[in-house]
Length: 477
Image (tube, rainbow, N blue to C red; front, side, top):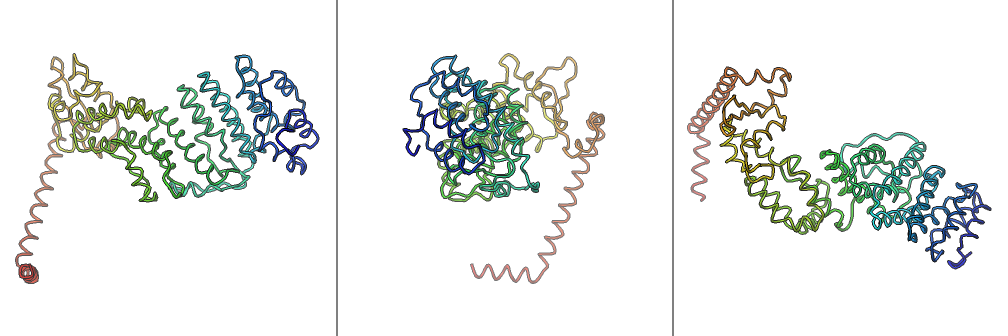
């Protein structure tokens, strides 16, 4: 059994049965052999997997069973073969203590890759994700039972990443199955799956990286949080998505990664939609790496700058210009999912200059007519409807009966006042007396500031030191 040719199903099972899991013989013979096993079956035989399904003690021969299941998934050519392989996956999920097998990440990686192959070739991402989320949920539960003491939550992304133990055998550890579960969830595009994965995988705190090498550890960590961010986007939790993508940059490395390039592109898109401004890389990320990322953005930074400094029409036109790039990067769907959030930021910017405007004026200032939500038959009515759907107490629309939509008045209220006031009192803030009082206070503040600056200017003019310094600077020039 020292060569790969001797690794047959029969002698592996006999070895596993002769050396129960956890014994010295099990660790010294079976585990090293399985790590080097490269598909010895040659071709798929249903009876091989059928015999394995009839094994009495599945936990004892768990590693063998996982290898055979991975081979079955890779070599299956019919629906019947795939069904039988998924029966094996279900047995692994329900009958094997996978936490004890986390010391063999190569075996888990082979199983994850085999499931990925089935999902890709059969378009069965939903089925694969359901199998993986059940498996990963049980892994997390089993691993959580081994926690020694709870660790304090860290505030910064870098601290959270550095707090993970490298090769600990306690607590919830990152495995290849975790990452593949998130990937299949994103590909499945089912909201109920997103909710389940969010609860059972994303929101479960990781305690350690597990038994991964340094290189695979960094890649697994980055891929895990890249796909976790996409799961959050699927549930419209853009704030948590940005937190997950910031963690992609948390680990120190000698070079920037393409995974980080992908995460940064998506971070820029979601940052514009959620916050109305260009997302920044974490402060702890190396400047040399940041320059590498900027050089690979392919117009994404130009889009962010256009959004920050130009009108909505210019931003929409820029998005259209980048459609080919966005489609190539598989980000066009992300743009479409967040496109409806863009106008609110342009509308709120108007409130920093005006206290009230008519819909027609707001349309001209923001360029809302260029947005896909603007109906060609009634662009003004679409803008009124959009502001109402924003449900922002600091931006309200007043449209009296019989008044055309373009003549409706949009009022921008003081954000602090609307936050402090109860919901039922928001309507009272809109009356003319309160607006007059607010304007009077603002004018008084401006007058006081003007008077203060005038006094300061007169004081400087009469100060000898100021006059002397000014003369010296003139002569020196």
